[in-house]
Image 1 (cartoon, rainbow, N blue to C red):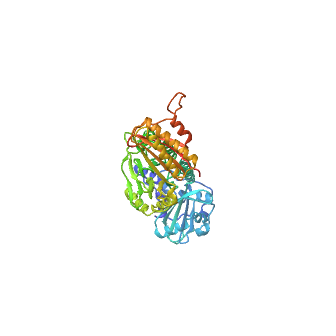
Image 2: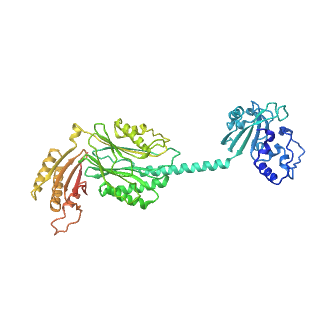
Image 3: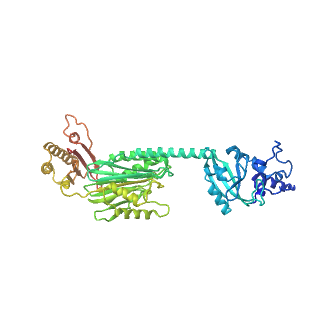
Amino acid sequence: MNFTRWSARLPGTQRRAAARTEQAVPAAPRGDGSVPAARAERPTDGADTGPPEGPGGIDALPVREVLDRIPALVALVHGADHRIAYVNDAYVAAFGPRPVGEPARDALPELAELGLLPLLDQVLRSSKPRTVKSRKAPSGRSYSVTCTPVTLPLGGSAAGPEEGGGVLVFAADVTDHAEAAERLRASERTQRETAVTLQRSLLPQELEQPDDLRIAATYQPGGTEAAVGGDWYDVITLGGGRTALVIGDVMGRGVRAAAVMGQLRTAVRAYARLDLPPHEVLQLLDGLAAEIDASQIATCVYAVHDPNEGSLVYASAGHLPILVRDENGTIHRAEEPTGPPLGTGGWLHTSGSVPLGPGSTAVLYTDGLVERRSEDIDEGVSALERALSGATGTPQVVCDRLIRALGVTADHDDDVAVLVLQHPARSGPDAELFRNAALELLGGVEAAPHARAFATGVLASWRFSPELHDLGVLAASELVANSLQHGTPPMRLRLRRTDRRLIIEVTDGDDHLPRRRRAEPADEAGRGIAIVATIASNWGSRRTPGGGKAVWCEFALPK
């Protein structure tokens, strides 16, 4: 641009020029086009005549008068050394007087502090304007600076050098905007830290470790620029050797999503105590999610591991499939059945099953692990399958390897939750600590003495202490007697020991669940469950998938 015509480019000048054109008023002659005198050569008579009055007055206003009246900081430099040709009053008020003709590196240290000297070189070489936003000066003020190439007249003067190339530096004070933006960023950081703290406090601080499984989990919030989501997981010991595993993702961000997640996790733990099938648990969660916040939905997988069955029974509410690597290294994807997310309502969830025998590893995860904006989510799941096929070691090691293999870093743009469970294959002395024995209860009342004899022999062979042996036989007798009196065939007595407990379970074909009650002195029945609850560490009952029920009790083994 030509600096001598720069005044005509001001927005106010353009508006007034357009108005004069509409009124058909001829414009006054423009200035002589010379570079204005340097600040040191300005008239000193103290007169301030102000802008010329009448039509065409702005066009007649010298360009230096225009620049001196604007609140932005303006400086004009020229030549390869960027020598000072002019600074306006606002610049002087901000940084003090600057000597004309001196190089910017020496006379304009504030430009160096703002990192603008390389920008001046670039503008001078390319003849293209450049802008930097919100640069903070040592004084604490922030400026957005535009550097524009200008053409200076040759021939030289007190303020106009002989070189023809110069740069006009236009700096707008944006301190208020910068401080407001910083306050907003600080508020967002505080909110994010609050959400992360809430999220982590609602997740289990220490995972329950069942007898038959080894479990580890990892939660990683999104990067500092990402709002925290509602990813969650949990491990719940159901009793009788069974374990519930759950992972979910609330479709929202921030504190609200974390709060909804906490309510759902609490509800899952409560429903799990009822020992319901997975699809019934999700059915209850679906209604609760709609009541908590109809605008937020969540995906979830609820699975139950039964060591007696060697399988993982699960139900999914719109969540990603469970992956299982069997003892041979083959990957199984548990995709069906899958219902809609929680909170949508109007859907009957169903349960499925996937084998999880000794030597198997299963992975439950949220979409942050496999979802990428540049690719389909199925590609991410396939990449996770490949990573799982080669990930060996403890569950925590597998978690870490999957996180690395899927490219999850500290600045990842989404939350990630991973839950890994292993059913270890035991051998040698370790295998002796995990034993099973079962007896089909046939016939009528004569099944009771058969059950007592069976329990006596098995517990003796497992070398329990006399006290624990007698308690186990008593509990087995009471559970069998209760089943013979109130249940229907088929009936079975199962004894199971782990390295931590003795489990006694009786199943039958009647689905009426027993309850503990106080028997009156004259009652002939009603004391069996009360006796079991008194002598055992824990007891419970549940309905079995094929119809009927299972009643169990546990005895903790001495450490």
